[in-house]
Image (cartoon, rainbow, N blue to C red; front, top):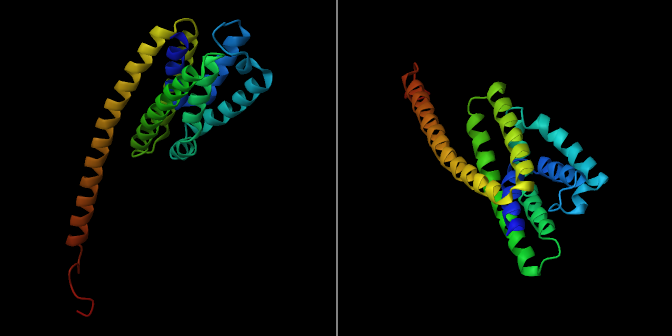
Amino acid sequence: MESLALSFSSGWASGVNAYLVVLVLGIGERLGAADVPEVLGRWEVLAAAAFMYSIEFVADKIPYIDSTWDAISTFIRPTAGAVVGVLLAGDADSLTQALNASVGGATALASHLVKAGGRLAINSSPEPVTNVAASVVEDVVVLGLVAFAIGNPEVAAGIAAVLLVVGLVVLWFALKLVRRGWRRFRSRRSRGAAAAPGAGRPPWT
């Protein structure tokens, strides 16, 4: 149950920032965390995760570039969540490994969709301050949740579940507001075109 709870927490976090999840878990293993598989603490894994996180750290804070990065990560983040889930299952039976992979991958996909949809909503007003603030908050939450989950997997899983539900609700309202704003913009644009001089006249008059 502990590995399943940790898979859920790390899955949610992987959907937001998979490379930071691997980095935090790997550092946890280096510091002696018993529940983290040894492979995540290998230096080459840590170096690769740190390198990719440094790229995402920059890309995730630039309007429109962040949405492009999210599109590229659509397959990466759920896969990372599933792989981490399998690793956390360790030498358990294949059913447990499959369950952990399913939980980690599905949770990562759900949180990734929340993150990507939220960034699309934010980019409807493309100014960098909001993007930077959202990215920093996401990184801090992922860092804190995964570090906390290593020692308190069940509680962290509960927190991740709340964050996922809240994220889905906020995303629904945000996309609803964006759609409403887009309809108003198109309506004003149509009225402006209709009121323009010569609008509606045949081209030969």
